[in-house]
Length: 341
Image 1 (cartoon, one colour):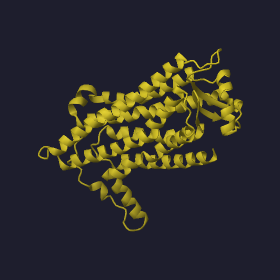
Image 2: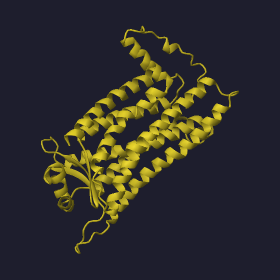
Image 3: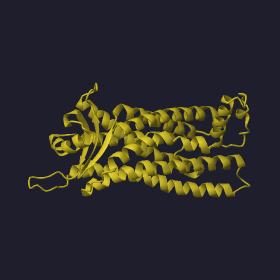
Image 4: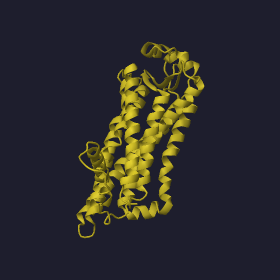
């Protein structure tokens, strides 16, 4: 546990620094006509920094055991009691739902940015900012499901007591947790599926699948649209085509990151306890991947998008004394860059 906690601290520090730097780059070095996409990028960067901070505050531990998995917090020595700690965990889980929604929203917006017909039909004018509210809805929905259906109880305490104390040396009364107990043991000594739990998990599966659908469906359509735009050399400016390509390439890399670090781990965590199949590596695996995600997610934008990459290079050269500070970068010809919002 000590290793993973140190790992989380390091990831949180990196995440906060990188997302603050990315926010500053977006504000100072973005093309003047980047449009509302700039605010969406800032929205995501600020969320990821906040997510890392909340992860440190909550110190969640993910653990799978037979027909259940828990997200728990050791509140011994904390100023928060068991019930407040449970609410902290619910908020943490809600933030996970927020992160899933924002992947899909990102791709919906990017497709609208390259397909004016789609944008004018579904997201005209200020309606585009509705996209900013979807992650908040997923956050609320996920958090409320956790609070209503996954609250700890004497039954879950009895079921999880031995494994939590043996794996983490945390007395069950010093731990607060959400518990997804798929098949509680009945009076006959046999496991029986709990319809309420399966309903709640079904809602969560809907959120995961809807996010994945938006990522892949709009991602493929966005790729086809950008490819078509780039091929129209006579009607599209070079600057705009380059910008669209950079933004999309960054988005593709930012998709691979959550697929590997978020979608796959949460799929494993949800599915295997459902069929009462315990995977010993799940506990550490999910904890590491979720902590790592916000620390590396800002990198694609910072490295792939030329405006931000060049600003970083100029800053490093200035620090090394190889280049004087100037406004030369700000004078790069951006006249040809049309609005992408």
